[in-house]
Length: 239
Length: 239
Image 1 (cartoon, each protein chain N blue to C red):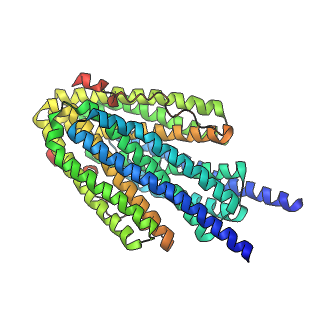
Image 2: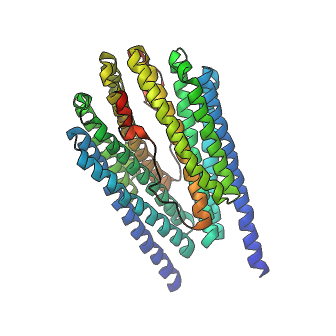
Image 3: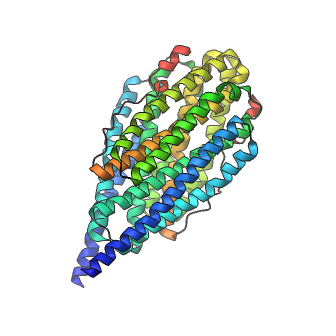
């Protein structure tokens, strides 16, 4: 019995170490999104470059999580809930690594946009969207750590707001581009940025869904309302 | 000894079953990309709708792979190479599921574009890019099944061509949009489609890299040449 107990508690220790890595990743990703958004708003190419460089640290943590989870699987052979937890951690780390890439890709566009008035015009809506999605990400990690299904559910709903914000920005960009063809290049890049922010919201939602899966064993229905209206042709009304 | 042999061969059987699921997923994803690209080219909204519906089957296979790999991990507790193989399969299935989503998202834009002359103008370049990326995907799965590092390496290089094709399309779209503001809405959607095709190429590359990791234990350098020149401001020359 003592032997069993020892194994169980070793597993818990290993898992706590890995979870700490994932939370550290989460912190870095939130910072990267905040900085990328700030760099865009203040047209700070240096800050954008720091975001690009900083992505290496996120990738390294993801590698470390992959190595450590593989070790835990090999050494502890967890079963049932413990195994599900390890697989959830791998999935969350994967989502965070992708969010880091998305923030990096936003930062990469900043130097192209430093001279653009289009940034000025869309400043507040992009800032609000980035903040909204950053909070979703932070809360999705909280929901995982506390195994809080209600909070996880809330994030799925908040993703609809993120989708709505994206649609508003998309239409605004279209209007600006049609008013003045000199806005077209900047508009294409800003659309790319808005879409990347929206996708970080999708990843936060995926993390929340992993929490729900971990606690309840079920994923929510796949066909939850999707509000990217640009797909449904609504945006065409502007055309 | 007989007992050990029995366990090993059971693991191999389980793995083969899971790999067959992944290959089936790969086939469905290639078909989805081909059909989405064809639906765009021939403005076939019905075919596009079938691609959207077909994504459920891909998602279900991904769920099955997740469940089956969890079972194998729990029951067989594979170590060393076997464990690495299982983790690789999870990662490949994940990449394919995302490719399915990307193909679905391409299909979703088709109904918006049925009346657009812009599709006509970019028809052949989009078709070539989709075919190139579809072949990369198919070969990346072959490289995995045959543990063929040379072929995997080749795919990483071919991704540069995919990036180049994307850049050419991006510049062509910009030019069309600037020539006639009525092209702007379609241009935004076609840019989204081109970017999604390019990202399927990134996933094929990720699958090839998983093969290299599985065989050699190393991932290639992260800083391989990246040719999305729209990020580097080259495309601005058109602005």
